[in-house]
Image (tube, rainbow, N blue to C red):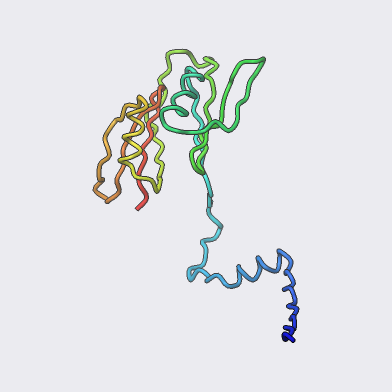
Length: 166
């Protein structure tokens, strides 16, 4: 007769409450050797630029179809598109239609540039943007501090520099 194997029942580990797990993880992290400056300074976790644009439809098309952003939110007033949130990776840009209260001839994008970093190849990104009709302000280049980047301007002249994280 075959020998019957004895089944061993293993106890399931009990799951600790979330607060306990978080506290243990926090305690395991090395503490900073330098005390934080007092009074405490500002510590941001994200930044999302907002642009007032001349033609919202044109800008949405450019950010979506040329750069590769995804539209994640739209807001309308009386059935008219007034703004959108576009996202690329973990970064949001807000685009809103100009209401022209400050005049139709005001310059946009002057003296302003947003710097973005990516882990993607800047050469591949620049080539794809050019294939989709984008015009670069400068081709991918290595900056004196060592990073590779390229730059372009949106339809309203807002400048964007995209660099590859080292």
